[in-house]
Length: 288
Image 1 (tube, rainbow, N blue to C red):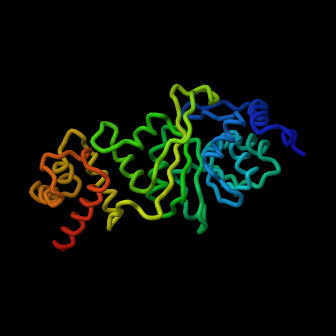
Image 2 (spheres, helix red, strand yellow):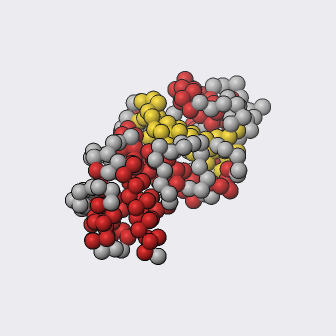
């Protein structure tokens, strides 16, 4: 029987980290949550139910992993740092958790998670937040919901509204696919070691039916990327560059939306971006 089995997950994690001489990596953005009460609140907010399949990205020392497993979730935990393997083995001894020691950005999620629905719970290194969120939302295998710890600034960007300085491609993409809400705000002291920023637990519940749906989602993603590509340029200039068309064609697309030719991409709402995508798709079909 493991020496950690009867200990709380947080204490077991601290002891295992010390025993195996683990050194936190700044380059990997490692800031762990080792407080059992706080982890329990995070799992409560994630609304995980017994039997649910959960993809945990960045289990760290396994405190949240163990909490998820204790709640009856079927957990697949993806961790890039193999030096955490003995720590996780000690903390999760006796629990049925599947560990994958790979880079989440290089994994085939469809192959990893199979056909069943799943949700994501993650305390991510902040430098890969946007990449991971976009991969989860735009890939062929999507979760039903995402509960993710992010830097407060990133949370504000994802929840930004049109025609503001923080309205960006990440916000538009995230808000197209799901409803976003802040669940919990955490100070640096909640983490080991403490980061230099405040953090927010963000919930993204993917839509069953989107409030606005583009006819061609791949084209919409190209339109979103183009709209925010160069913020100081007009939407017409950005569309001209992104779609290799002349300015007159780009202006015709914009005119069909009833927008001023000088409009900038960051002024467009989600509904207008969807309409623009449909207009471009129809125009290209007519030309073909």
